[in-house]
Image (cartoon, rainbow, N blue to C red; front, side, top):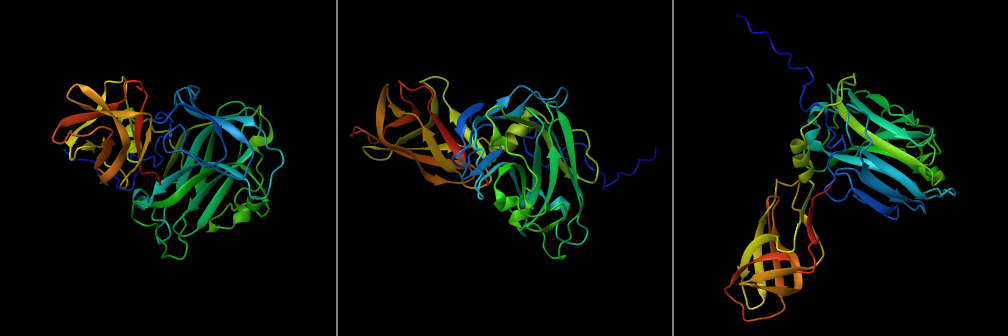
Length: 361
């Protein structure tokens, strides 16, 4: 029996989509957040950041069960809650995903043999709008843009991005920093709209980034929906890749992880007293993170020693950290406990406390 030769250049059936959480299925932080617009934020759907500047407009961002049938049950929904019809030159509103350079080496961008890529996505809105998608090379400060239109029905948009050899010696960095950004422009002042749209690869010119767009903030009746986002090698938009939710969650947890109690008795980690008031313990992260994470806590915590909860006078705080393990330290309010083992938990009156580990680009 003769075995058929494998075409090594063929696009793989699995893992061809370089976008993480393009189906908008994972939302570890929250499913809906109001009042967005004063500053950039990762609010709901993992890996998708709302980047904003200098606008009085405000919005609600939701993970919404309104995706196109057969593609995804979920989508990002933006709902304009405060309009901003008077647009200053330096205003902007974007939905952004950033990509690590080490995940993009298959593109070969910036050198001989660079590959085409195709970006596709499903989009709809409350009315007909024109917006822009921009692919931006962070390492070499280059970009390419395309204007797209919305209707009130789901439409798949496709953007064939030509190979960019650039000067032949400008590869994307092979590391864990941001090398490429996918940017959806939904609102902008003249700083980014006063030139000619960069429809071919070029050195980044600010005035050429969002030419021709309408404003999401033009009316509080405006809504915008996005899902099924894919970026793949080659000049053809293949069928949207359906990824196992466990795979997607693991990819998202490389950038963000959250410990959330179900009840006030749930423990986060075990540890011990290292002084009369100092408690320390190790927490093993669910997957290796992109970089050493930062820590954020919300709510009230306690240390259970023997059968009693001891309130904290400080912490939890990072004592040491790697991308795989963090060591948390805290100070309890009473003393003479040296040598006892115990565990960190939510305070009895706060069963919604949570801890976040953040390694976003």
